[in-house]
Image (cartoon, rainbow, N blue to C red; front, side, top):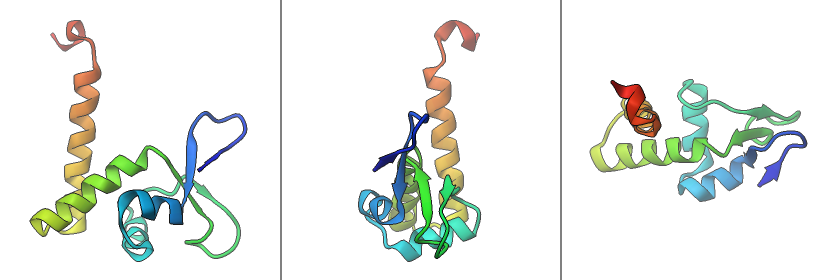
Length: 100
């Protein structure tokens, strides 16, 4: 895991992300090419080997992987479920007074 100077976020290489999500590189590459997951930083060289991912994408990919494996969902549906989970988490994090 690398921290880019001047940036508090951690950036993961493809191999690191694969290990954290328990998914092969091809599975992640398919979702990147479909526009379901964003690549945070691109490095020169081979496209997939130069990818860097924001560490926040780990939860999204884990959710997508679980949805696809458990329910046989297509990647687009799994991405929608992940979007909804992220939105629910964001709303729950808001102070109660703002919800009224």
